Image (cartoon, rainbow, N blue to C red):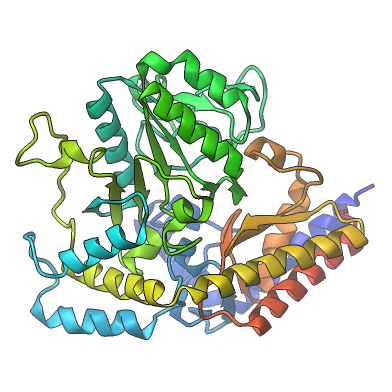
Length: 459
């Protein structure tokens, strides 16, 4: 039986140690709270016991405001695939910067960036740029509805596609109950925030992830369904990969009913392979959305697809074209930085072989350790995406994660930070700069954290 007092002492002790070694970070955050809601620019930056305040980042390390060094597997929420502050990106920005930071007009850096998208990704003939993944998914839904003439969109429970009203639905953060969230075969639409427009989220069809009942539900709405959007690997939902057969059947059935298949590749794009999840899984959607890696560390969103799927974005020739506009779309600094990253990735595909092998090493060693020592924990993910969950058995959807040990989850995150690992919530990432020694440190820190939790009666 868990010793609640011992667990509380462990967790509070970790919080005290983090606070003691990071007083400047704590002070900065407290100052932020006076002028910024919760003291953060994004809710996902909140952390126990307080957000990290980064002073600088280089390679595989970040340093906080108190000059504490951390081994970085957060990578700006997966963005920094070449490592922090890569020289190729700095060079690209330095070259463009003297000519202006913003034009609000077309410029010569757009073509090479867009051409790399089209050359690298199997399902992209044309690409349009915006400024965030949220914008990109919003435009993808608009394009699907305009093209098909149908009103409804389907998403998967646990899938995170940004914060706009149409998709801030059923992220799976609440414990599943039949009354609130519906049965696993037929999830209900649950708004994730007050203030969402009811007419938007209520009409969103929510599908079960990695479950065959999803296909029956799609068919029930076939004549009204404009598109189905899916993360090939649910990122914020826990780094849960879709099965290849599941994605293949999703491709088949959406084509059969004439609905768009939309891949949200904001995280997986250019991360799992040069062509992203499309190349990795061998499944080609109608359109896909991008951000993160492709921006080289600067704000980017993008929507790409087949020439036919992108037809209603030909604003100057197609009647009924959708509205897509933005002051900073295709910003010259962003396109230059992104071009530098994509050039490196396209020229050195062995980077993926190495990153994916490191990811597999982490997962296999942690799972062997957990099995041999009877820990109710397992590492999941795919390629260079990974996380360890405190559950036994199959993990097919975010509902499976609610079986986890809440005290262990809290303790692991605190122990990672206390012992010099910088990770996100529910997902972590590798970059081209990580070494075998970094992975050894990652594995040993995880093992030590598991052992310390057991010693305090968490498991």
